[in-house]
Amino acid sequence: MSTWLLGNTTVRSPFRLIDGLKVFASTNGDIRGAKEKELVFCKALVDGGIISSSFEAEDVSGFSDTTYSVGRKWRSALEKLGFIEQFNQIYILTENGRNLLNSQTLQSDQECYLRSLILYSYEAQNSDDSIGAFSPLMLTLHIMKELDNRTGSSKVSFQEMAAVIQLTFSYLDIDQAVDEIISIRGNRQVAVSKKKFDRELYQSKSDQASISASSIKDYADTNLRYLKATGLFTASGKGIAFIEDKKLIIDKLLEMYQFFDINSSQLKIQVGAPLPTDNQETNILLIAQLEETLQRNRIAFEKNSSIKHAPIGEIKNYRYHLEELLFENNEKKFAQNQKNEWDEILGYMHLLLSPKTSSLEIADKEISIPSGERPAYFEWVLWRAFLALNHLIIEPQQCRRFKVDQDFKPIHNAPGGGADVIFEYENFKILGEVTLTSNSRQEAAEGEPVRRHIAVETVNTPSKEVYGLFLALTIDTNTAETFRHGAWYHQEELMDVKILPLTLESFKNYLESLIESNQVETGIFNLKNMMDESLKLRETLTAPQWKSEITNKFTITI
Image 1 (cartoon, rainbow, N blue to C red):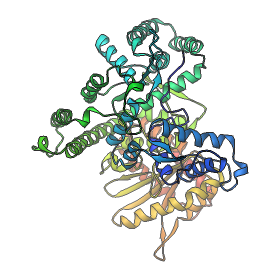
Image 2 (cartoon, rainbow, N blue to C red):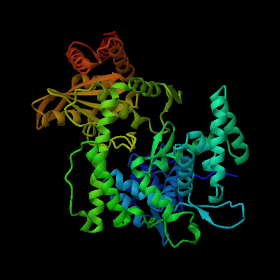
Image 3 (cartoon, rainbow, N blue to C red):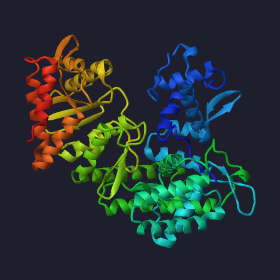
Image 4 (cartoon, rainbow, N blue to C red):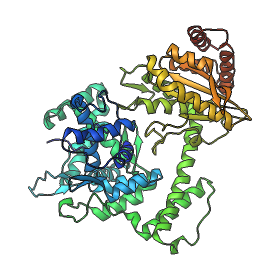
């Protein structure tokens, strides 16, 4: 026995592969073989901000095994998923790779991943000794569908994915897998210590699979992420469940592919699997379902009464449009609910401040920050905090420059060229910038772009006061000095840009004091006043003194 794995644990977030694909497209494709060739892709990944590296770009002799491995694993993930392929020793984009690269929406991204993962295969370990290859995605759909039939819910927990589903290697074992999941649930429910039960479960499976218990959990984490990238699943605790609106597609996929052997199929992962949504009839059914959902939720949309007679491309674009409207409405609901999520928001801030703490239990769920995604989660938790403070006059999606998935978790941190988050109110704007860098590197990396972003927004919004809120785990004195002066020249005219450097701990303390004093409703206006008061001190204090005064001001209980 072993485990199957979608992608690899180096590239745990499937949506980051889009960034890797963009970087790949900038190379000549000659990225495998001698170290000089491997270095091409590694350098491109570093230059694109995808990976970090300590090696000197021009110094091939200093090329480390670690960097070599990272670049190779990125290439491997893209190739295994069918987004690139080798042609005459040169890697090129595939048809599905081009579709993903040119995708403009989350929905079309998910469609590319779905086409790929249907054909992502492993050799089956069949009890009848027959030979074939199975799709882990289709296997998971079958198991969850059977669970839904038996229990009334498709939900599978993280533990069930780790200990059962990813250890199943045959369509013949679907019923056995479901039996085991139901048995585990019963035993876990009566266990005195759930943590001890889980630990012993992982260890027993570790012995069977001949890999470490930690690897079993790492694989489950990665597999769940890739499965969610198809757009068929939503997060349910640390596990997954079917998205209600996607059950029609799931049923048609199970009917379309059943228990097919990928090895005997003529389908190619580089092209991608045909989907039920390639069919006009299925699209019309989905459109009717979406229109009914939009009407039920009183979401305004312009109905296309002649869509049934349109070309398939136009039909799919109309469906994408309806899905996007529903997604935007769900994001509004998410934003409105943030005022009830302060414990979780503050919990994520605690995890950012305490990197050695891997997870926290908040109410009845466990939260954690995935490995390598702290920058994205820093921006995300700031966005959530300002949504909870409320009084915004723009939509929640307009406040963020980073992408989110169907569960409104961050896919990646915001691209360069602007502030990470933008919050607009009746009479002012606050632009949020976050960083995990520290020491003198902080000023070098953030001093110029942060001032430029605030200056540009100030010029473009002459009718409102514009502030920059710079959050970091620690504020380097050189950074504070740069922002204390707040100088920026625009068309030869000196501007004073208002930027407040603040530690995340101080910001967290401020939010906690708002909650304790029941002043959340006026919290954003109190924050503006405190920023004004702090900015007035710039001219009379040195950078160390200014830092100290800011910390004191935000530490005092309101």
